[in-house]
Image (cartoon, rainbow, N blue to C red; front, side, top):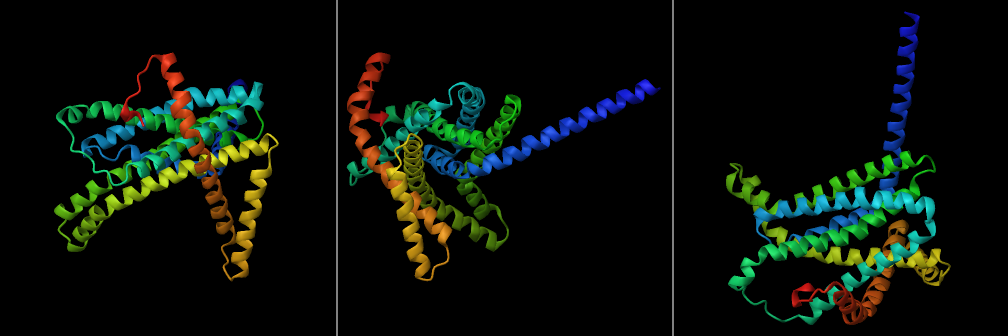
Amino acid sequence: MSGLLALLDDVAAIAKVAAASVDDVLGQAAKAGSKAAGAVIDDAAVTPKYVTGFSPARELPIVWRIARGSMFNKLVFLLPAGLLLNTFAPWIITPLLMLGGAYLCFEGAEKIWHAFAHRGHEEKPKTVAEAIDAAHLEEQKVKGAIKTDFILSAEIMTIALSEIPDGSIWMEAATLAVVAIGITVMVYGSVALIVKADDVGLHLSTESAIGAVRALGRGIVKAMPAFLKILTIVGTAAMLWVGGSIVIHGLKDLGLKSIYSSIHDISHTVAQIAVDAGLKAEGFITWFSTATLDGIFGLALGLILIPIVLKIIMPIANAITGKKETAGDH
């Protein structure tokens, strides 16, 4: 009997340790995830633009494909890679993040350049061949979204990893896994709600027996095109902001602090001027000024990278892989 009681005591002790470990993982995951909130918002803002233009029936399947690719990126590639690099080669993380940030700057700037270059050009009606090729367009969009998500996810996971206290590699892995799953569900759940809001509005406007609800549904339907357009602009701005911020912080970590210091000083000067003028949102003004300057830097860097990427890097990459570039690739 005493042996059984001792065994039960041991089981209870193990259960308490396990419960404490779970609490530690969840607590660290919540803290680490909150530190990456800015990148999470950017991820949620960037993704819906890859879904616009498709039939309503394809919207949720596209979101699911991107979410599945994002989860795969985080758990299969980024989590083990982050742990290994953090353990054996922490010096390489900053240059890799800077490369990812530079890519975001290029992509954001290229979209702005493309929009201005094609301003005033009327979109030609789709031919039968183009309509039939919708599956190919969807494949391109999904691949582009997953590629962009990979970079944003790398930043999210790196920020989260930096906020986890030093401990066992298993605790770090468990915490990062919780962060990866939680953030992916939150981001792509939000995206799914956004892209299906017009369908919900249409249903309310036609099916509800209450006049106010029908009016709300009509308002949602009318507002969604403008909202999605604004979200596309926000997504592009987010790429420039995040990309510029990654590169600037990377330069600072490598010892080149002048750009970071200048932006820091300008932002605090702007905030102080606002406070002296009677405004009390010093923290927000400092953040907004910093984000704006990071975005301007990201745009400038992206514009510099456009001819380098399109005229030098991509032709070399295509020659190596044997891929022929088409007009629809950019």
